[in-house]
Length: 117
Image (cartoon, rainbow, N blue to C red; front, side, top):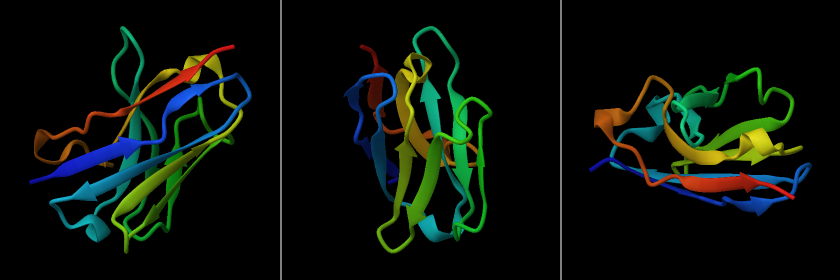
């Protein structure tokens, strides 16, 4: 059974930082490029950042480039997202999943990030 458990979200002031974590199970994690996605109220889910299966490459949406850093630990089957210089427009529910789209259509519950003063 494919599972994603995201954590680390919360309420933070503009300019602040958060580190998101995603624990995974049920698939061959080390062979998959992974990604973080987010969905803001009333908007479509969008890709935020991706990382290769061995961490050899990363890519980012233009809106977060230079502020967010994706990483992974294959031994722990985990993906991380370090978010710095947060802006109110980063407010969304954040999810992790395969870089090529949801594995077997599964999504985790996500973790809420709210950036507000």
